[in-house]
Length: 529
Image 1 (cartoon, rainbow, N blue to C red):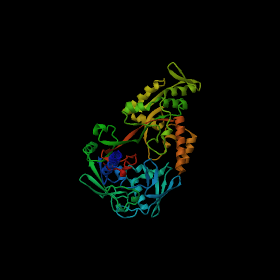
Image 2 (cartoon, rainbow, N blue to C red; image 1 turned 180 degrees about the horizontal axis):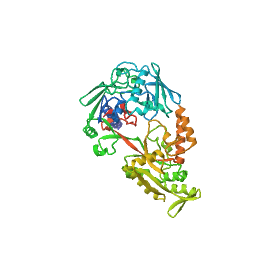
Image 3 (cartoon, rainbow, N blue to C red; image 1 turned 120 degrees about the vertical axis):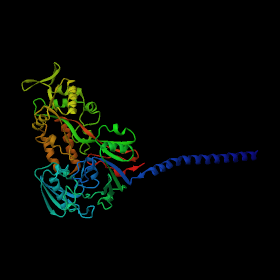
Image 4 (cartoon, one colour; image 1 turned 90 degrees about the vertical axis):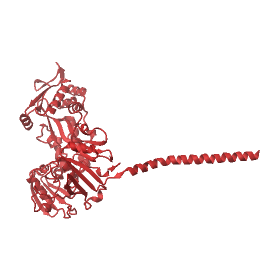
C-alpha cells in the first residue's frame, strides 16, 4: 500500500514537471513573439540615402532669378538666408550671428565668419551687399524684401549697416532671402551666367543634365553636427507640366512633391500616399468701412460676423478646398492660438447683440434711431465682376444675412472701379484679400490709415511696443490682446485662406511638417518601409 502511494506520488510529480515545462516553453515563445515582430519592423525601416523630387516648368536654380515656387522651396536646401523662419514662423539666426536694430530705419548685421561657401571661400559682409544690390537691380520674387533699403555700408569684413527709407515693421523677417557669393560672380554677368550657383547650405548642386538635377550632401556644412540627416543624394526630376509629375508619382518614380492643386485626387486618386494640407498665405476677408454711419457701431459689425457661416461658404463655393480663417495669423504663426477663436457662427447671438443695443426688428428689417434719423441694416458688398468666385461668396453672404433681416446688395463693379474703391476706401463692405507675409505684421489691418478706417488707440500702442520686444512670452501676450480686441470689435471679417499640400509615397514613413516657408521640415527623420 505504501509502495503504491509512493509510486502514484512519483507519477504525479513527473506529470507536474512535464506540464510546467510545456507551460514554460509555450508562454516563453508567446512572450518572444512581440520581440520578433518588433525586430521585423525594425529591419523593414530603411534609412533614406537618396530622395527623388519632381519639378514642373523649371526655369533656373539661381534663387534670385527663379519664379518657380517649388524651385525656390528646394533652393532652401542649397542657399541660406541671414535669418531663418522655423516650422512655427519664429525668426532665427542663420548666416547672421547677430542682427541689431539701432534705430527705426537702421540695422547692423554681423555674418558668421566660420561659414564657408561650397567652393571653400569664406562668407563675408560683401556677399550680403552683393546680393541686396542684385535684388535692387533685377526683378526677383525677393525684390520686395529690400524695396525700402536705400543704403548699404560695409563696416568691416563681417559687418554691414543697412539703412531704410522708412520704418518697416519686423524688417528682420525681410532678411530671409538667400545670400549669394560675391566672389563667385565677380567677373560674370549675373543675369546671364551659365555657371552652376553655389551656396552655403546642407546640399550642393553636383550636376544638371538629362532632365535631372543632382544634389549631394555638403559634408563641410557649417551646421552639419546639428542635423542628423542620412540623405546623401537628392535627384530632382524635371517635367514640362505638373500632370507629368502626378503620373510619375503614381508610377513610383517620385518620393514626394508639393502642389496647390485643389483637385489633386482627380489626378492621383485617394490611396497609395500620405498627404499634409497646410494653411496657405492667401487670406480673404470682408473689409468693413468703420467710418460708415451704421457700420461704425460695434454691435452691427459683431452681428454681421455672427451671421456669416464661413464653413458653409468654404463648402458650397470652394468644395472644401479652402480653410476657414478667423484671423490673419492663423496660417500657423506661433503668435496665434486656436484658443483665441471668436464665438463663431450664431444667428441667435447676432439678434441678441442687436436687441441689447437698441435695434428693433420691425416690418422685416432691423431699425434704430441714429442721429435723429431711422436707420436700417441695409448694406452693399462690393466685388469685382470679373471674379466669379468672390461673386459667389458675396451672394452666399447675402443669402445668410437676409435670413435674419439684414438686407444686402451685391455691388458688382469693373476691375478699374473695384481698385479705385479699394484704394479710396469708398465702399460699405468689400471682399478683398492679401498674401500674408512671413512676419506677424498686422499694419494692413490695424495701423493708422488701415484699409478699414478703423481706429483703436490701445492697438496702436501695442503695434508700436511690439517692434522692440524680444521676449517671446511678452510678445505672445501682446498679440493675444490684439486678438481679443479684434474679437470684441470686428473691424473686418476673416473668411478663408488657400491650401497647400505636400504628398509623399506610401513607402515613406515619418511626420510631415511643411509650412509656407519650407515644405521639408522633418524630412530628414523620414525612412522607407
